Length: 361
Ligand SMILES: Cc1cc2nc3c(=O)[nH]c(=O)nc-3n(C[C@H](O)[C@H](O)[C@H](O)COP(=O)(O)OP(=O)(O)OC[C@H]3O[C@@H](n4cnc5c(N)ncnc54)[C@H](O)[C@@H]3O)c2cc1C
Ligand code: FES
Image (cartoon, rainbow, N blue to C red; front, side, top):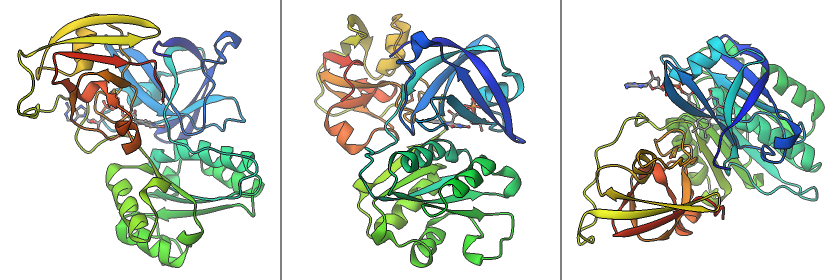
């Protein structure tokens, strides 16, 4: 699970001016490694300007499609997304880590649920996978999507969503909220902020009828929607979130917090990493760098992508010792309670720490 596999790009499709969909060919020998659930993401790795650059991209295809496909939107000034939009072509070979992530809920054919999703921009990618998979798996369930964009020209997967509406006319409801294009119904004009979300919940969606809500978009929108949903009575446990980026810029180290008073001295920690059934140990200085950075420097091929506490690629279980964790935009409360940590955000505070990448639950 921790390693990258070279996959051939089978197709590249221009979805909008600044977004490409990239499909990968998965050889039969890797089919089980690349089996995925709706809402999961892949970590892609490329050498760009001589640097190892890795980023996460959500799978947009339904589980039933079996096609491994992601959509990459160009971020202005962004290293990987610009490279992918300009250089990825069919036949190219790129390193891909098997699917990861928990942005989904258990589906069952006998369930009759109403799911609600809020997406903005490229946040539609995992949501499209979740909607299609849910409607195909649960013939009695319904899905409502509220999808924020600047204007029609920037809507990713417009055709795919229109096809879904045709296919599931009675079970799929879609509303576009446009910030720079005037639509006939005033409720659907503007940005998806707290007020807009509350208005939609008052006039357009009956939250009492909704079982689970999914949100994927910028951090500010995500927080606003969570607040509005909770204010309208939805329990936090029924809200699933996927963040693509934090407002604190990634890839840059944050100043360390002063760790807990009374922590053990001396300031060296022996860290043992369990990964793919093997154990490796190294010694690191506390408060200087994260466990992930120290492990990589010691030559251990620990998995990571964003290094910003967002993607959870570095998720592992703390089985011995204690750590301070800085940013966490990826783990849910129940995962933290079970001892999961983000290696890229964790700093040891005890003499010995053991982390295990093989424990998934
Ligand atoms: C779980 C997950 C799933 C995701 N799924 C998708 C998806 O389906 N589709 C998608 O398009 N994206 C997705 N993302 C986002 C994706 O991983 C990348 O973060 C995104 O493509 C930007 O990467 P980049 O290399 O192009 O930009 P980066 O080079 O990482 O830059 C990001 C931004 O930071 C700015 N920046 C970079 N360095 C500095 C600096 N030193 N100082 C100031 N500013 C700086 C850049 O100008 C840019 O605006 C996902 C992320 C996560 C965590
Ligand atoms: S590498 Fe993304 S959360 Fe740690």
